[in-house]
Length: 165
Image 1 (tube, one colour):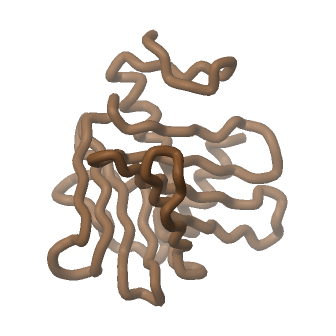
Image 2: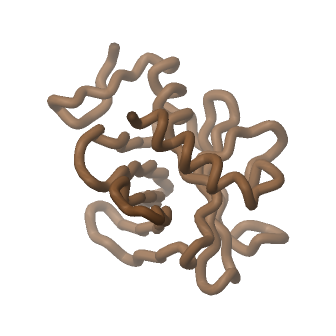
Image 3: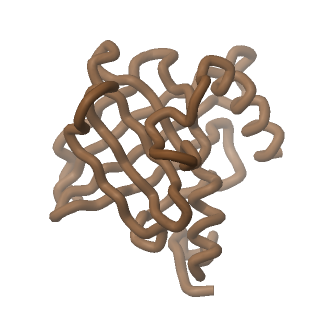
């Protein structure tokens, strides 16, 4: 079921995307949206065994660019149940966490993918920036899930955490 939902989402999301938005070279896009009425873009990509996070203007230098081995990026996969399909990836830097997430109502006749980035210091939320309505053009963290498995991590549904395989 997840594969079918993501396939339908991918067809709709990628229709407006002519390139691997926000990725460098042959990277795999995981997430892309605009924020603040198009003034900023948010991208998460997979480059082999490295995940990247980019936040900033669509052109020019990023306000923040992070590159981390997939084993250091926390990823919360969809549970496989419930009305909402949602996933999140968390990038960390110097005591701050940047939680990129998306959600889609699986039962809606006209599903719209929404996205956000939450900025935390430790466990304390500092900011939550929603993606502009209709701007999420890439939303599929499953390649990150597969990369984490290839790096020797396995998702434990019981513990709701990554463990060694």
